[in-house]
Structures are given as C-alpha cells and as structure tokens.
Image (cartoon, rainbow over all chains, first blue to last red; front, side, top):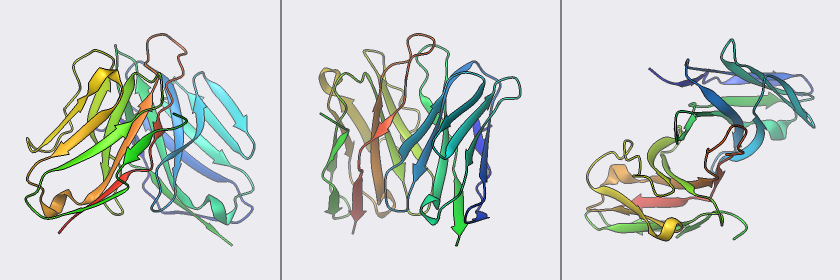
Length: 112
Length: 118
C-alpha cells in the first residue's frame, strides 16, 4: 500500500484560474509536508513546506494541511503557463529517523 | 557548498562496465537520498543515509547497486555490470535530520546524473 498518494493527472487548468492539487497520506505519525515542482528534464524544486494544520501562503501558492483527514493540498492562484510541470507531494513520517516519502506526482498543464 | 552537487552530469557507458556516481550534499546535512528517474516516470527511491545509522537500502533494485557515504558527507553510488535498463537520471538529495518536532527537513536535490548504457 502506497503511503503517499496523488492523482497522476494530467490536470488541465485555464490560464488565470486556480489549480488545485491534492495529496493523501497513510495513517502514520507525520510531521512535515512538502510540495515540489519538477519541470521536464529538470530536478525537483521545493516550492512549499508546511508543518501545522491550516493554510500557508507564499505568493500565488497556498498549501493546506488537514492532519485529521490526512490530506495536504496545493493551490496555485492566477495560473500561468510557466506553472505547467509535475507537482510532487512529499511527507516525513516520524517514527525515528524516517525518510522522506514522495508521491508519484500530478502533471499540471496550464492552457493559455 | 551552496547546493547539492552531483558528478558527472552525463555518463555514457558500455553495457557490462561499472560506473560510479558522486554526490556532494549541502554542508551540515546529515540525511542523504539517492533516487532514480526513468524517462516520464516518477522518483524511484534507492537508498537513504541518516547520520551514523545503518542506511536504508530497501530501494536498491539488485545487488549490482551499492552506495557508500564517507565521513558523513560525500556519497558514491556504484552500479556494477551495467545493463541497458539502468539508463536513467540518478538524483541525489540531502536534508537536515528529523530529530525534533518542527525540524525543517526539506530535501534539496542536485541536478542529477544522466546515465546512458549503450
């Protein structure tokens, strides 16, 4: 059973709209949650981290964490064609020195 | 250094040869990961080093793959008797350790090594 799950997409969103990316994780003690963006042919790049329940905003990006429901989401406002990429969710499950676990990623395409 | 550094950036090798890929993590990062990514696919976890603990080797696909981390810093991933299916981008990432609640354990990736086995 996968521990971090994402819809693989592709997710198509019109330019200027809000893109919503979701990630669920298995029922284990978890503390740290991250969103990475990966352009084709490039390495994953950290864009958001969130550690407590609620919303965290950074520019056009908002991360939302709900530990009770075991999901973390990423909202991209005013989507731009440059936001077209694969978005990876990652979770640090805390049980000693647990490694970071990645989802398989959601491919997002912003349509001009 | 300022970021995670991997070398070489590209490596072309003949089937059956051994290759070594190097990763130099961010200074002070005690956690180090190796991943593999085939074209159009997701990240495939290979191995995880955490401080002085025994490494988590659960993702290594075969005994042809091995990795070591010397002095808690630089890591080398070795692939013996390379096969064509080993062709992929090999990514290294490093982070601080998760040793207390609220610790910032963001992982940062190197630029990757593109391995082509011909």
